Image (tube, rainbow, N blue to C red; front, top):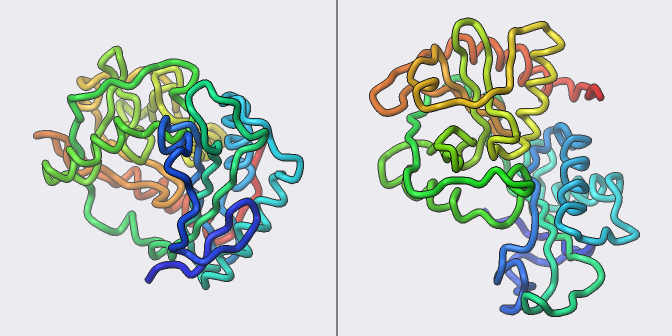
Length: 289
């Protein structure tokens, strides 16, 4: 069932009414950014991390922040929209910030637009109990490692094509490599491996998106003195891993059952899920610095 409403620049509008011009810069050039969030029982999970990433991304994209746009105001609007759409208990939220109409060099309106949408979220605690996922490597794109690579922007073509590749090859997700032929991330998640007792994930300098759940898990692993490292990962590292798991804010943790002909277990990832994700969703814990 489609949600009844969306919010555009703070105004509640019925879903399905056209809002974006064909001359829109995000439509033309991918000139925008977005956040995907999870709302549980009226509380946006890890919202301070989302707000920090959003405003940093806007700064990097040289988007002038509207005077009325604050983290507190955004949080209030998101909760109100989810409530209006009857998604308050469990929702998936997408917040998109985009410039208005214009050519590549045309003057722009002073402030970007802010679009907020909500959908009913997947059942809580559903991910770690299902079978592990099948993963493949997308061979037709290499992600850059420049200053924009870790941002969550609307320039999503490599991920969109990798997602189509995964579906065509009967996989649940696909790994996107960087220009050095090393792991960046996957179409919708950051990637971690367990190898020789150490948890490893690619650093942001490898082209990985600066995932909110990635940041949260690194913080929790370090606080609990798990051996953890951010370092480049090759395909050979994945083949030699004991476990592979993927993280994002909607699913928390998903364990990988198979990559090509290699099979993996998910026992360690399941324990981590129970120790970190379930308490987060159940208690709305406070975040550290």
